[in-house]
Image (cartoon, rainbow, N blue to C red; front, side, top):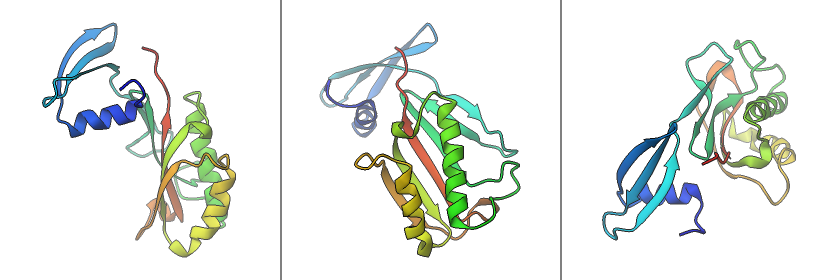
Length: 173
């Protein structure tokens, strides 16, 4: 079990229907999770979610830290004031979206190299190739995050592209 990552252990615990006995210790919740079928204990320290408010005038957090994972909200190539995307279409929107994602990551002392999962939503799947050319330039070849991409019926504020990310951000225990 010591070779399994935290996300894998969390997923296993959820799938196997673990019970959870907790006690508070200095702001952390110490958990003793037991697999109901095997009785094997999965020990760990879970920190309550930490919310990072969005700078935009909308009701969502830009990121939420849960355990060792930082979940970033979907980001568009917003022009900075919350009224819509930067002009020019998929290319400038994608670059601006990445700049906003990098800024959110940096505010948590992280970078794109810490991202391990992306979900991409495109208003027009015919722009997938143009998006991919730009996307590939932001990550180290051979270390691309896992990714899902889909065409959607519409995006906030008329955006052409939106992407949410998950990043590994280990917490001190």
